[in-house]
Length: 173
Image (cartoon, rainbow, N blue to C red; front, top):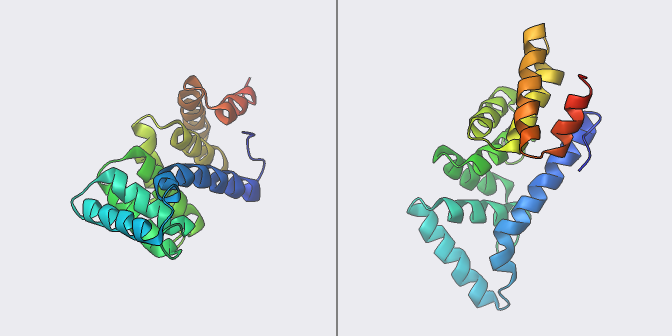
């Protein structure tokens, strides 16, 4: 995965990552062949989601995001991702940050996006750590402290093998 070079490329990069993750969450739905089986699986996910099952919330969010097993509905997808994020799931927090960043199922809100990226990054999610570093480097970047904070977040992500973070750190050497 290459480091994005501008805002448009960053958007495409994050969208690609999100699609990969959603494909994983929806994979059990795709394997089901009959419409009745799909409806049954969706209903089970809805019931488990209501009980607070984070994996079911992520799966439903992914299915609504992709339109697999249900009609595509980014607003519903966002709502399910938000439920999982509010339960503290670092993957969901990253997804919600992405939704707020790019207006997927909700209004664009960079401040909220940043909050969710930070929550995820603080739990050690390398993609969120890279995102936080990127925000400090390219969006905040109001002081030398912001640049140092960006380097710290890039370093945390790089230590986990995040290739774009490794490349970003090379710019500081």
